[in-house]
Length: 258
Length: 114
Image 1 (tube, one colour):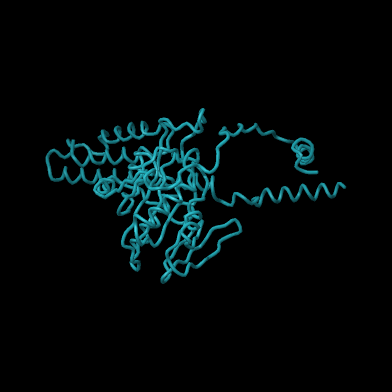
Image 2: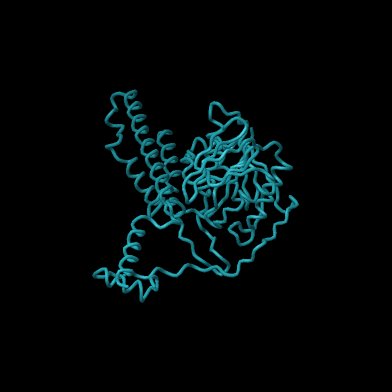
């Protein structure tokens, strides 16, 4: 069984972003692996390490500029066997490269470059674009079954047993037969930290590079970004003396109660 | 410098880049340099009489250092999980119990008033 994992190079989760003239200012900003993608990589590696699984290879796929090689090295250090880097200078945070193009690039890799991929694992969403669309779109394009927001994944014969985390609670669905697409939620696992010895070992692993423009996929954004602005700063809170003045404020000033 | 100590420092700096502290890597670098120089942690002079014992004590100290690095990794993972859960999970989209109770109480009071 072969697993393909999508990893995205995004602005680090702890960075306070600034909005510049052309969207979010990415100059000299710390970039790292998307946390949900880390969870997907961890799940792929766990499936490979499981005694009863027959996972032969875990391949990590990343789309972006040449610095994506570092992101791929982190994924390889966590336990992936090979990396695929699709080179493009387009911004991946929804400004230039959008979910539709990414899903089509994934489809190209699965259909033409990597035969017999049985499972595609992606993160639930990227913390820069927050779309959460690549997983479902890819499943649609490939005609594969999908399980999104997975909080638990088990191999079950020829298929998978996936627990999904929704607002109403948890539901368990069965995918009778692979191949399939699964997108990973926060509760799925705790990603391992890539330590120095593993990073050294990862330098020897193979990374294939393709150019996004040469893959014959339409990369044009389907949605146009009209404006990017910071949210308005939070207003100060006020202390009230009793319940009646609270009700009064809610009714008259906030207009929340008729 | 002993190669094990050099390797320990390199590991600490690699992990320190993600350490959640306002001063970031500077804090990690200062704290680790101070700790590595601290005679309380290991001082070769204490074992000058017994070179094999000195090597053994050094390795023990490096082991304690590696434990400290594992603790740093724990802090990094916890901070990341908690931030992600606050931002994206933890039943954000429905009204939590406390707020629901306040809103229900307000609704009852208004109906009573009418």
